[in-house]
Image (tube, rainbow, N blue to C red; front, side, top):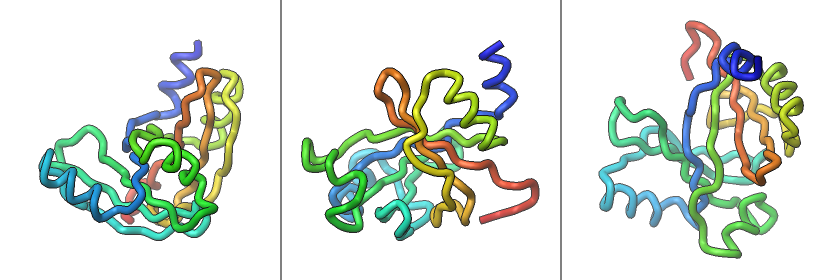
Length: 150
């Protein structure tokens, strides 16, 4: 039953979030080391208190890399950066139904951290953050409406 519910919500891995002190040096490293390039951004998101850009190697990538840098000392990712300098931060899944996805997460003992709120990087589509019982952070983003581009 739970697997059927997850399938009905249209979950799709959208990106892997990577925290970095600044976008430039990490973008350059991913370009030089792995051949990634910026495909969108940078975006400044005052609601999330971060600046982000998205990288991919090609249109065939399963998911993009979202580089996330703090806008200031009160950014939610600042505490992670101060502990170890950055790295993998979260996985983001797109969903066809935000409200049902959040109810599904709650039914599976996840805690809503924040949202849903509009996100600059997704053309105003709403995002929400959930924390799992196993202490993992996931971002949910609303799917694009049919025929709408960003």
